[in-house]
Length: 253
Ligand code: MN
Image (cartoon, rainbow, N blue to C red; front, side, top):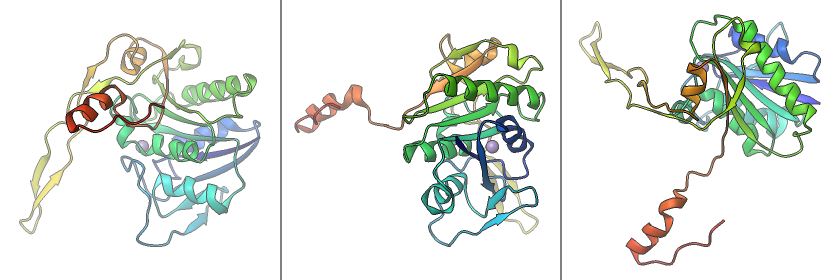
């Protein structure tokens, strides 16, 4: 088995090293990550300049680009095709609307887009507390998937792990994405030269966090596992829109 390991926090992030250590012994590992922290870059690809790939002393590759760049370059010529892409372990939750902005999820999604099974791992709280326990969970999830012989067919899983010393003993829950409130207001400052500056505000609190959601699972002491898909089509309202525009509805899937 060959496993491609990536992240969005950068190649020096403790979460990447913990994930790489957790995958030891499961197969051949390739590690490739952004040179700089690229959290919140979603699925961005760098198209306006070439990318450089460097190798650190520990064998990790790093790229002056985005998480999607890393996996894209790896899958399209730099490295042999993997059987699995794992991303993380991210510093902070990727639940609900976070998944749209997340570079951690995007790195995994890039694998999925190329037909490779992929898993994104995140710790719910920032600060890397109980990282080794989260890494043990990541190992257990991958081992279970291997044991179930699920690696032949592409899938995309989003795993969020509470920062607890006993994370490896916590139950797993399959979940759907919750929703967050709109982000906090932008924060305005003035530069030393008098220019107005704007900091994007923090993510909003959970709004839809009832039973069945990723927010609910992690808040209640469980590891959250959300299967993701990419199709953003509003299938529910497709017929309604067709009627409103007086056009035939497209063939269903
Ligand atoms: Mn991140």
